[in-house]
Structures are given as structure tokens and as C-alpha cells.
Length: 402
Image (cartoon, rainbow, N blue to C red):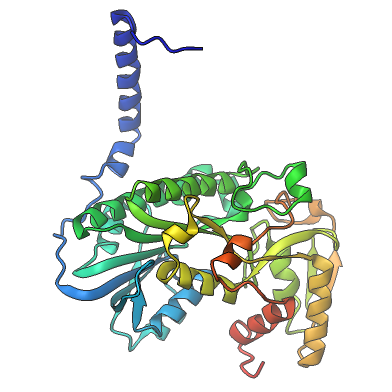
């Protein structure tokens, strides 16, 4: 149907009324205040008095992935900006989370460039101050903080604020600072393979960056929205964004209320004692795409530093390297590595999903992913499940000789 090129005066008045009503509706929810560019600036003036310096911000630095990345950055003296061979001195490394643990506080003592910030990632004024260049030429932000699948299902509004509105706001803040600094600033967002539709085709074929996005849960939908916005903000030259799509990053200790818990628990809840019993709510043959924490951190580090936007392409999403494992495979590897290294291993009890106390009762994520784009970008892709288990023993169980 063709759209008429003229609109009657009555129609124009109706249109103005509708648009005005929508504007009032948005204003009443505070979205103009949240995303208005004049509202999301720090009161401090943007000046460059630290030539050749870069400021790096890690949001979610107290978490599993965030802290491993932060430790890598703490030991780094210089860092580049994507698409440039120039190395910048790291003038400031801000580690931000809702809570900063004593483990992190103790570790960063003696590193004067590190600044720890506790606070609400949805606080616009706080984020404007955290992301302020503070005299540096460049800003690189790693946005890892999120509300995971289980809590996002229980509390839709909290998930929406943290997983969708907060990234939108932070991209707008970086857009403003980039304009004042004269170039787009780097924004590395962590997404999830949970964005993909769990339809028959995706169950039978590995998903990839171009696969249809329609997650069966709010967490995945929120992340999918941000993936698209990262690409569009980058296309417009507002930021230099990239979204690293994570699979289940194993092994997270102490994680219970997420879809992927069985793939963590079958390792973390069995190693270290013969008395441990892990009740697994899924079938032994259930497959799931798992990524290795060390590879994941290496990918984040490279995407923030050396992989140019032109190489990534219009779709700024990159699937992290991941392999599809059945729970039985993981369990067999735990027993094998435990025996080799003389580490006690408990047992697994396979139970019905309804007997589990998890919020998520079924795996509704496609079981395999393709990471060819990551491979073509030169990101590290190879690992084995034995590598994963040994890394967990070394870094979480403190078996340093492993």
C-alpha cells in the first residue's frame, strides 16, 4: 500500500496529540531524565591534560568474569585503542560493582591506578562520573555487570533496568564524552547466547551472530536489544562498540539460580570431598554450549584493545569460542582429572527437574554455537574440558601446583 503524501489538518492534529501523549508518557516514567544527554553528563569539565593516557572501566568487576579480566588489566601498564597501533598509558583503572569484596580490596592494595567504586549501575550521575575521562585521551568500558536468567525471570523490572536501560544509558554517556574528546570511545558489552530463539532449526544447527534472536526468557530478550543498539550506535559513529556473546562460562563457584547451574555444579559441587553429593536436575545426555573463562577473558582483552570495528563489521556481535558438552562428558572428565591429580571427588545423583529448587526448570537454549567469526578475527578458540577443570582447581580451589 502506498502512503499518501498529504495528511489532512484533522489527521495532523490527531498525530500531534498522539505523539505528545507518548512524550508525556515517557516523561512520566523518567526516561527523558534517564536518557536525556544533558542529564547524563558529569558536572566536571572534559579536558585532556594526560596526553597519551587511557582510562579503563570494568563494570561488574567483583563477578566471576569481571574479576578475572580486572586482574589481567591490573598487571597491564599500557593498552591500545582498537584500530590503532598506539599504546596508551593506563592512567586510571576503575573497578565498579554493587559490592566490592575484601578479596578484591586486598588484591589491589599497592596499585595506585586502581579505583574501587561501589554503587548502583543504574544511577545516571554516578555512571557519568565513573565514565568521565578524567584528563585521559581515551576511555574503554567493559560492561560485564548483569542480572542473570533466574533473577531476571523473578524480577522483570530489575532485569529491565540493569540489563537494558543501564547499557543504553552508558552508551549515551560515552557518546557525549566521545563527542567532546573528538572520537568514538570503546564500549565492550557482554551478551549471551541465550538471545537466540530455541526453535527446531536452532536446536539442530549451531547458532551464530546472524541467527534469529527471540529468547524464551527476559534476560535473553534484554541482551538481544543491547546487541542491536551496540551495532547501531557504532554505525552512527557514536561509540566504537562490540558485543561479546558469552556461552555458559565454566566454572562459576557458588552460582545456583541460573539456567546453566548444572554445568557449573557438576564440577564445583563434586570436587574436593568424597562426601559431596550433587543432585543434577537434567539428564546426563543434555548438551549445552560452554566457554572457558581463560579464553573469555583473552577475547574481552583483545576486543577492547586490538580488534578493529571494520574487521568486526556492521554486526558488532561476536560469539565467544564455546564447545557443546553433555553433562555425562563433564562428569567423566571430573572423575578422570580428579584421579590423575589425586583430588577427592564426590558423586552425582540424577534427579527430576521438579525436585530441583532452581527457578529455571528446563534448558531452552540451543545446544551448540558456531565461533567461526571469532576464529577469523584471531581470537583464541581452542580448549578442552580438562583445561576448564584444571583452571578451576588452580584459581578457585587454590591448588596452585595443578
